[in-house]
Amino acid sequence: MAKKSILNKKSIAFLEKYLNNAAPTGYEWEGQKIWMDYLKPYVDTFITDTYGTAVGIINPDAKYKVVIEGHADEISWYVNYITDEGLIYVIRNGGSDHQIAPSKVVNIHTKKGIVKGLFGWPAIHTRKGTSEKAPKLDNIFIDVGCTTKEEVLKLGVHVGCVITYPDEFHILNKDKFVCRAIDNRAGGFMIAEVARLLHENKKKLPFGLYITNSVQEEIGLRGAEMITHTIKPNVAIVTDVCHDTTTPMIEKKTEGETKMGDGPVITYAPAVQQKLRDLITDTAEANNIPFQRMASSRATGTDTDAFAYSNGGVASALISLPLRYMHTTVEMVHRDDVENVIKLIYETLLKIEDGEDFSYFK
Image (cartoon, rainbow, N blue to C red):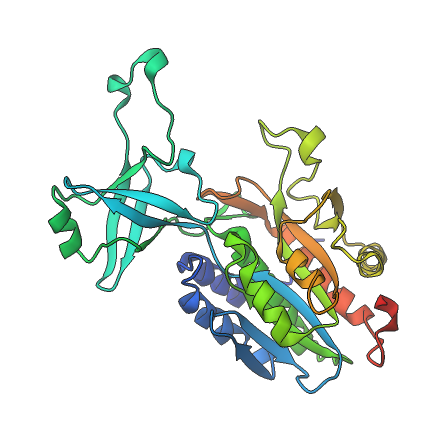
């Protein structure tokens, strides 16, 4: 007998629309509008901050506050230099991969709208043996079909315009979600689904729940760093992606072993509060939710760090979604893992019953 999916047609339609919309670091506004519109029926109110982090709140008057969080931004490029011949050189906005750029089509965002371009690269016939150069930040370039700088400027393209890839959502082999920006708009999707399940199942929480979609994670956890001081939470459960380390050219001895399809990944790290992590693993075991473990020696590299070390210390934990091909345009996750992250966060929230003093987490 097939198991019942917690994702419905409306959920998948939202995921597709949300992923396909461009939301590069610093320019997350339109994506946040899509996210808030979907979340609106399931929360009591919203707050936003000046840089665009959005928070849907259930029980806004409650004394004790629990955050569930993902981040909304995607990696991108900036126009950095336009040559006299009309070619464009770029710098990173987040961890964009220079090696995948050649031959990729791009969208350049301007006040006049999207300008199409492409990362050009010399034909294989012209590249000679040992002198062949690999793609690097100083030699990849964008061609928008212009032959002069003046033509480029007339299109509305100027230094500082942000550049994204247009690759859109699709489902591979029935249960693999593929798109750019799954890192980490999948997180925003999953926490929104938690809110939907709480609403549809008529669950009442003894604390305020702050469903938080932070901006600017890709350039240093900046959105979470700002919003945690606004919310001042007692507990934060963060979701992000981690590597599927079973694909070629990844060394498990250094990266650990985590696999797409084997369940959510729970992190062990100094920023992860032990009692909260144990509550999550106990909840997974009690509900037969498969999960994996990973270790981070110093920082998790996620918004968990920003929440944990704020406001005198916030009990924080990280639940990750295993992902293949991070920071490419073909990021891939397993539908079962997406559903199990949602289930694990949902069931963990139902276990947090001490709304009086939260002494469990002290």
